[in-house]
Image 1 (spheres, rainbow, N blue to C red):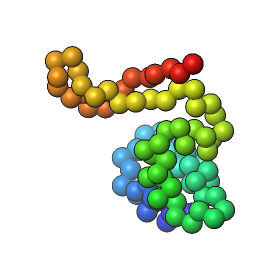
Image 2: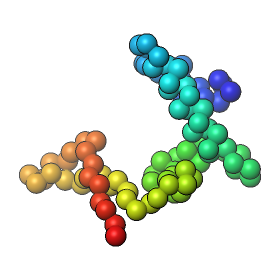
Image 3: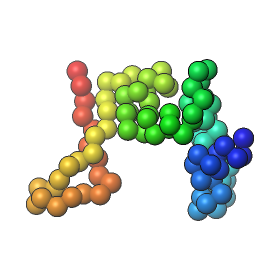
Image 4: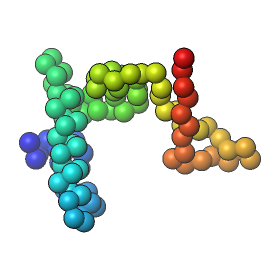
Length: 92
């Protein structure tokens, strides 16, 4: 299992080192692999990439509501790009 986590998530290169951080991240990565490793879906890396770009599909895998999705902010008012910023849209 460590090999799969290391190849898929780069676990050995992780910079999380303090307190229980490494154990928590290992548990999160293991849960993600368990969710993505479904019968008939052999390629976990491709499932990770697919669901990384499609938040609704990822939420459906978890069995949660897709009433909201997070979308990146395209531009600031001044026209410069915001890196890492996002806004939440609510759908009724």
